[in-house]
Image (cartoon, rainbow, N blue to C red; front, side, top):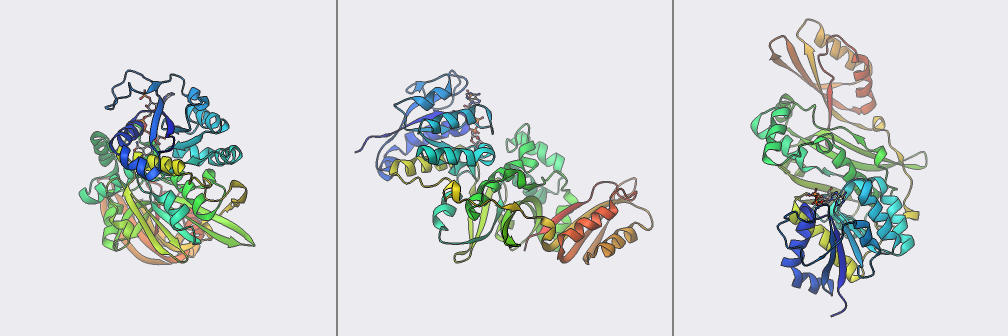
Length: 434
Ligand SMILES: NC(=O)c1ccc[n+]([C@@H]2O[C@H](COP(=O)([O-])OP(=O)(O)OC[C@H]3O[C@@H](n4cnc5c(N)ncnc54)[C@H](OP(=O)(O)O)[C@@H]3O)[C@@H](O)[C@H]2O)c1
């Protein structure tokens, strides 16, 4: 058999320990498929003594992980530390600069610095791969780069954050409100002690920016992702959605349109109403799913565990097998110089149906004020539901579904109502997924 592929693992936490376990358990089949053995030559993390549930004493330990980048006995550096900048980025720059292959599960770093790293990797002739950065165990990067390579992708969207999806689908099942469900998710280990990245939509936005770049051949542009999380979704919204035939999901979506001779890219993470018959409506718990619509393939659904040691390690080792086979290819599917700069598409130019929810004082004239704002902004109301009192003290919930129409009209209606004495909280809008 040819020489083994010698790798270094930086980071031995959930994913790093998972990679050690996978390479131990599946050594023979990995070697058969890669055409050579994949061997861990050195490892690094913060604490040498921590029990990681796997035997790391047999590997060479390095305190300063950037030292891994320049060792002659290492072909590929695997970064499983995390963080957009800091030690992970320093390691990436150094390893790629030293012409090592580089594999990472770090979506934050790729979303922020992916272009720079891909450019450096091309210049160095070194493979850069990040399957595990998007949707854990689901081979969606590979699916887009290879499986749908013959298609123009018209739209890509999905449920990209397991924690948010766990919270929303639990609220749906139990009728509990957001805060209680989040607390329970934290107790059960489905949400981090600091869940901000997950519930604010940032984690989904990182993944969406990576998917959009690959799907549309666009220069990755994380700053252009419109992002709204799930903290404003109430149990009452989920109940209204249910009555109307929908479930609520945090959806990341991207599409690209030609306007005035230039391409514009819409990237948006937002709670949406998903028809109960749509495949994304059946994605519950911590599962992730991505839908890619190709002009010849039609609608494809990639679904599976979006996190966890086993699934994420599976994606990391799949990248290593590609590198061992000599099948790395361009990180974003085409060389960086061919990625198109695309201006952000303004959501307001889009048309669609929208769910709007207001919490208002229980007093005469409030409903007339809401509907007048809709009329003045050119928003046509398809249905209107007024709930009973939410709380003693007179707060009332008014939900509306707007007919298909420009999103900018809905935004205009909200502008007209901004500062109104009748509102007790900022309104919530959710796009209705077509
Ligand atoms: N967990 C998942 O399910 C999952 C899924 C997809 C992608 N990812 C991504 O995979 C990466 C790793 O995630 P994880 O969940 O495995 O994280 P984790 O369990 O927190 O592990 C992080 C590892 O990095 C080491 N580390 C942290 N800061 C360091 C520093 N300054 N210098 C040296 N080592 C340092 C830690 O060392 P010690 O162990 O000694 O503290 C630990 O071994 C992240 O980019 C994450 O976004 C994770």
